[in-house]
Length: 167
Image 1 (cartoon, rainbow, N blue to C red):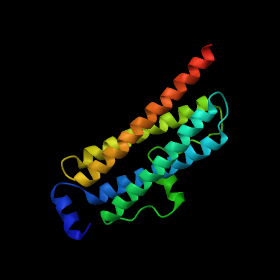
Image 2: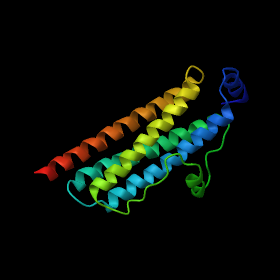
Image 3: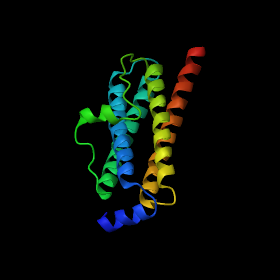
């Protein structure tokens, strides 16, 4: 997006620097979520671990796709995506919850918590750009829709596991 496009967004009330900062925080969240899902799928143990691992691998791929979308938008807005993984921890909204306890229920609970944080993060960005920046709005809405679906998917697997354990 050229300087003219940025000026138009600013005229519409978008604080582009603040938006880039928010998107970089979301980018950090996406990278940390990607790794949390990926490594969780590798170490997971317990009932229905194959089903849970399949969900985690799919969600990891989605988080990587989200990171690509967010980084591209940051560049379009004239910003620079975070260049160092060390920075992810410093700016992340949602953090990283290492799967120290590999039990399937615990890993699912950790990732549900991460999805709930991501939903809140993207909702905040949506409110910043609503009626001002349709490109960012539509991208964030698409990502947030995925995050809501992820949370639903993980809740469903967790509920199935809990039903199995009641028998």
